Image (cartoon, rainbow over all chains, first blue to last red; front, side, top):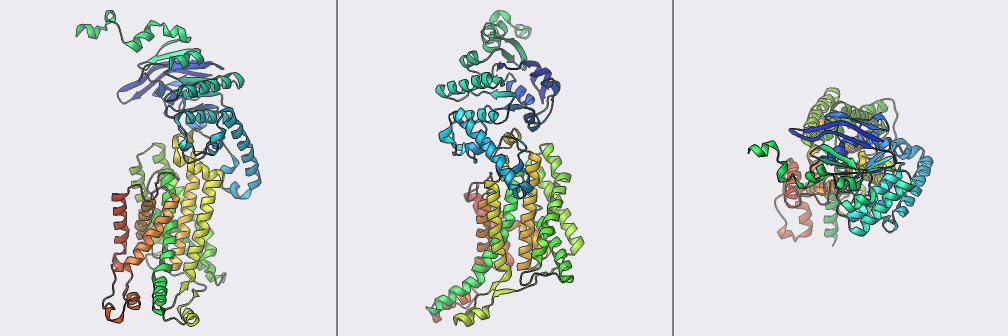
Length: 262
Length: 337
């Protein structure tokens, strides 16, 4: 579904992503873990088209989409959420959802006045869909609340709702669990599993919460210092030596040559 | 008692009515600036000259209509020419965006570079307008001049003071109200308007939604150019058209946008009236007004004018500085449409 090959990203003198490869298979919930500064979010941003890679390629469904801007990728069914939930804070929850479908008739200035009937019909259809999404997420009581007033977790749910407004193929989730309380996190997890099982969404998620990862993700990709260290099931990577090293640091007997000479 | 009424009528005639009209003109101009800032995130210094350009187009077509005997008396012929002016100005604004600003957006330039680019656009527009219509005063107002003349008012009420309401003033306020209602309906009720608000709220997210940034930007330019043309035309009918005056209007318009909280449309309107009324009340000579109100022996000898009209732009400056010092976000929190 998403295939990343030999991806590099240089920020000035820092190599944030170093020869990374990722293969997210269709219908999977792939986890992407790694210590802070491992380049996970940079990798996500490149896949999502926020900025182009220094070198390397990104494929979506076998098509080369390297460097395509976000709204083009969105049109191809690739959506993402952010580590800190993004929302249109001055619009209501339902309006936020109704912004999502692309190429709405009402977006053209002339249609607003000239073909109001058609615009209205389309809007009704989108509104019905948005209401369905809201009830799927159990957010009915917040439908007409300004999105800016929601709690962090509710905003994450809203972000998940955004992906349901269009028939997303792949969703990139950047730390949905960050700053969300346990109950709400379980709810978000349920929603992700249901979307995966019932609607066939493919997910690729950055996450730090290992319990959450173990519950949802298979396979798990581990990154450290810009490179991909390991790929496997949650329990496999947990016991992978390179992974443990990346998280806890090298033990005394595995000193690097530089440290030895020092 | 009768003196108090006379004083009030005098005040209304020289302060309230002109302030209302001027405020409406500034508000429309400031709305354009604020919308552009809200979506494109830069202060457009060329706005005053866009206004001059739009008004120039309207004047040229007004003259054309007048020569061919097409008028809509008692209304000014300029109203007929406004749609053409809006269309051409919008086209020029879109062309400028394509030629200048688009490049800076694509390379994600810092806002100050966009601002500097707009200063360049300002000079070019400035030159174009002077090249086509010349630097001098142009009059193009026709039709009925007064809705109520001072003499009729005096005759009808028997008061010493007359209240005159110019056609241009009534028209300004009327058109401004209609435009503002239409604009708010547009921003809050239509998909395009909501896209603009969403884009202004969170550009990253807008790019990841079904919002086409190119379309939002284009619509914003069209609306800003339309508002500028209409505001400029109304100002021209009310006073007169001179390219330099329009360039100078940039300051009070910016002051209005910033005082109201830049990026906030309601604030821009509020700011327009705050600036207009401050200018008019500070530069008005209160001698006659006070003579009506206080006993004869206390009547002032001087003009009781706080500031000469030559210094009226200082008022915008002072308000701007005070607001930035005390309440930098403006009267209403801005940033987002």
